[in-house]
Image (cartoon, rainbow, N blue to C red; front, top):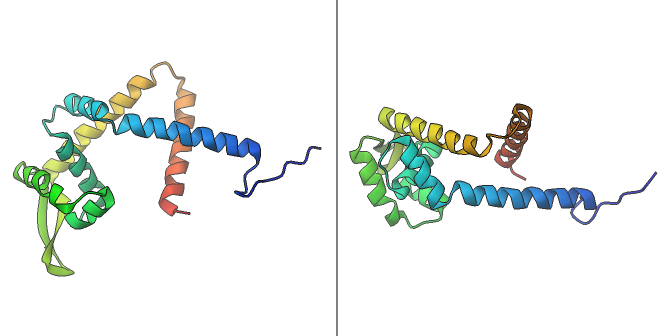
Length: 161
């Protein structure tokens, strides 16, 4: 029986090579998913006419609402002032709404309205179609395995280290 020792990171050489492959693949997927070209394709397919900034902010509000714009700015690593124009546009279109923060009446929380939820639904359907286009030649079992594995990774990310 061959003895396989773990390195300083607790991984065997084989595991480390596999993890390196996962990390590289996730970088490629992330770059594709968040590239301006992919986001434009999703926007066009959704039938919504939103700028990339508006699309990004609406998606972030939908994930974190109710939330202060200052908190979103920190999460997105941008200056809060860059979120004000898209927030005003989304609010004028009825996609988001502002309400006083019960914890601090001077602050406001933003959340997605019913119209915003419909827009998000259209965006997610368009996103699913964009991903489906990449998987047209995959076997159903392989897609299901990928979904299960990515779901498990997503849960691990949510739990944190």
